[in-house]
Amino acid sequence: MNIAIVGYGKMGHAIEQIAQERNHKIVARIDAEMMLSEKTNLLKKADVAIEFSTPETAVANISACLKAGVRVVSGTTGWLEQLDKIKALCKQQNSAFFYASNFSIGVNIFFELNKQMAKMSQHIDNLTVGVKETHHIHKKDAPSGTAITIAETIAKNSDFDGWTMDSENKKNKIPIQAIRKDDIFGIHEVNFNSAVDKITLRHESLSRRGFAHGAVLAAEFLNGQTGYFGMKDLLGL
Ligand SMILES: NC(=O)c1ccc[n+]([C@@H]2O[C@H](COP(=O)([O-])OP(=O)(O)OC[C@H]3O[C@@H](n4cnc5c(N)ncnc54)[C@H](O)[C@@H]3O)[C@@H](O)[C@H]2O)c1
Image (tube, rainbow, N blue to C red; front, side, top):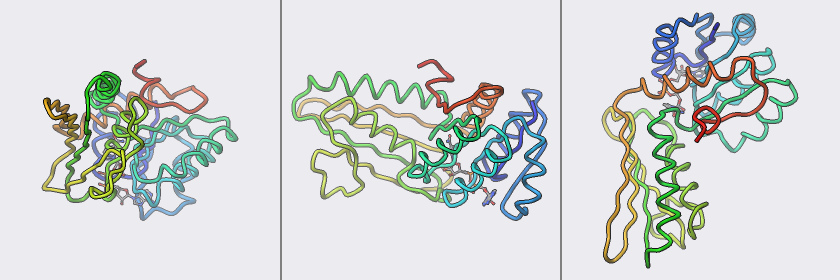
């Protein structure tokens, strides 16, 4: 398969390595300084573009790929308020778009564990739930897209009403604490506490390869498809 890498930073480099290990050809490496006209010419050679750039540039990048007739896998976080616009463009172009706030297969299993825990926790009196995420100091958005997905999954499957970053003003919301430290790839910890129990679910990513592997699997899945997809479609969860 011919792959265009859009956003050639830490994730772009990890994706290149995994894609080549899986015998795919990288036909374009597009980063910030490249002209849009140059991008379009390069993009047209690709079967699928894999986009990991910045919250500010993701929507323009994804739109340019879809308009060039190229299916897109995106993992950029921090722009999801514009997801409906991208879904509409994807439909209009009769193309395919795959989004995941976290491409790690382990994290997607972790999402399911949190969902089950939220459903069962309705039997626990006076339960409090808190999400803590820790990432490297270069991460631009906070809280992480993964922490938001965890909190929204728990809220959807319990009596909690969404999430907040305001630890003082909880009002039945799930507090998310975001910590930026060292070179940490990503730690997510969820605490389900009552007066008599403490249950903790914790996931730690040990390298970027887990995310990159999931993104390349998503690109293989997307080749030849039409529509909007996520990790549940890829993993059948
Ligand atoms: N979904 C996941 O599984 C997952 C995993 C890791 C990181 N991420 C997200 O992916 C994104 C990238 O992460 P990273 O660690 O590679 O960051 P990074 O800063 O190392 O790389 C981002 C790259 O995008 C480039 N860029 C800036 N403007 C651009 C433009 N207009 N067109 C193309 N490229 C442009 C930058 O020059 C940089 O090389 C972040 O939003 C991060 O939160 C998601």
